[in-house]
Image (cartoon, rainbow, N blue to C red; front, side, top):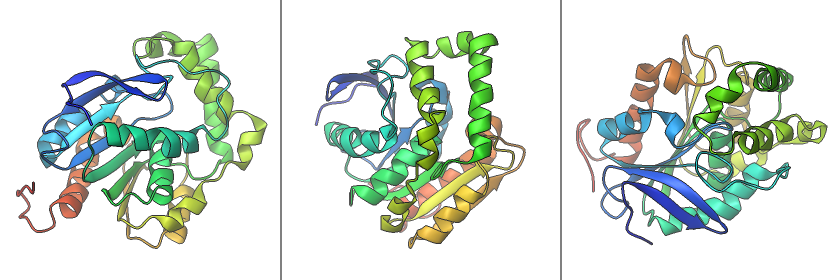
Length: 272
């Protein structure tokens, strides 16, 4: 465990991972650990982590996985089980290093899949709940088609310079993600087996117009999970409801967080 500055880098394994710590330290309050999407980073969350901290009173820890943001780049091609490797080989060391004691995992897209694998595979009693925004448990044809379109936008459109604002090696980031998802062997990717082993409440949020996944992902969670599964469909939002409908998304996550982390406090109360 180290003393966390408001921002900096953590050495986890062979990688230096950039991070932000917002609000109280893990020793002083519950912590929400945020896991970004397949093309995301700590910075690409925008001000949503700050707003979440203000709304819940919990500490919020945001970081960029290796290959993203200003973190160490990764060797390509990524292995097709890269999300399970992240969940079971990298995340445990990161949580220990920051002194994680009690809190939630909050993941978006790839990050939600990583959170699901960790919650089902690690048996970590410190994790009291999991929030999944637009999770993937299996590969859907429409999602693969959308990623293929995203690759075209990267190669011939204006996506690459936009992403380059957020990643120090944008090609490493983009190809690490897209080449895995568009590999024909990735069609067999399936992490639904982990859902049956999650022993804490789950909240799933999905935009009504998500272009990368259908309600089939939610149905799989409802079928496989023995734990409570809260589902919120966000109207007028696509794959990133925290950017496209931030108020509705923040309100839903805040309600879940307070119910799970502060069960014996009033709606405005805070537990230590």
